[in-house]
Length: 472
Ligand code: NAP
Image (cartoon, rainbow, N blue to C red; front, side, top):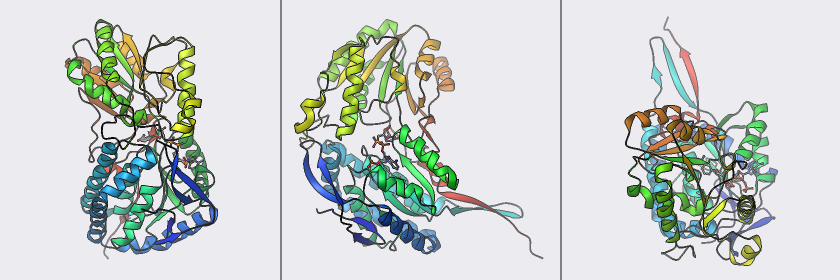
């Protein structure tokens, strides 16, 4: 499949400058896409502005049907999209396929939710949900298709038009989906994609005064920049940002039942996954046994080529992510933390062979390193022990992030205490991350602003208009 364009106003656009998209497993260039500058971004926003009144005036049933057709078209292209995602992210092929399947299901959910999303009539007034306008959508590299549909599904359902800027390393699946929108009958300009890096492409989108909302998933650092750059326009924002998620495991937990899924969840997508468990906070009485079993599970994971069906961990996605992870891990090791399993990653080793890294587990972390204040976007887990429930809670909350937390205990009082006091947007009790489409998803503190999925996620793309009426 040749993907070498931006998608603007229902057409392929090919500006002169381009950038290479590499397969992170072998550093082979798999595609070249345009580097969109402010001119291309402006024409994408103008196309979205022209399309907006057309799209919002479609009856909701017609919009819903278009979104349903898009879901089916993605399903029909499942094999090509799976391969593209595996190549652009470095994701094991089975995981890439699950991403495509889940994207299809989510769009089908949106097509139905669109019809349920109604205005409310009070006594003498109506509260109307109106589409906010042109939305800028900025996505990260780790789940390019899931993140895309999580944003455009609700935005399109309520009648917004969109300009998408995918991550420069993973634009391919997004471009294919954009092209499919035309094939299934979306009016030109409803979905536009501009490719290129944060600067200049993303910045040009942020600087455009006609972009009424930004939905962003990415690092807290870039999220803060988007927040600041949006203030002159008082723009609507949805920010899904970084995480450093704790798992609290009490002495009465049936942890043996969960240990395999905990290992898999921690190292899923080679640790490039905001909801994964980074910190294990384990009751002292079970600490040794728990760590032993976790390390055994970690040792059985296979690091390998993403297209090998037995691979559990593919490479990290790109040089920037890999180098940052190397620096973080080597620093932690040098300060005296105990590396129980894994091999310190080295920048030199990876340069020509792809960004592979074995899963790492650390314990005995010196108290002067604050693991919980950084995000680790790579395959690493840190172990801590605790004496009582208050201490476990204090350790869990001692972070600027507040995305998710995991609790393992059989004691209802303890569950109640922890659930009430944890600063996290999602809490899983005796289960491992399974997010539902009809439940909101987002973070406390510096993990984000606003919520995605569920009707709350749809509301983010609407303005409320209250109409007071009387008939004389
Ligand atoms: P990132 O560096 O923040 O990049 C995310 C997106 O923002 C990319 O498209 C990037 O473009 C773009 N960008 C960078 N600088 C920009 C700027 N100045 N203006 C506009 N756009 C800009 O994040 P990442 O490393 O790709 O992704 C990993 C992060 O995503 C992690 O922090 C992870 O926790 C977070 N994440 C959060 C969730 C959640 O639901 N909370 C889900 C998934 C991921 P280029 O990369 O092309 O330059």
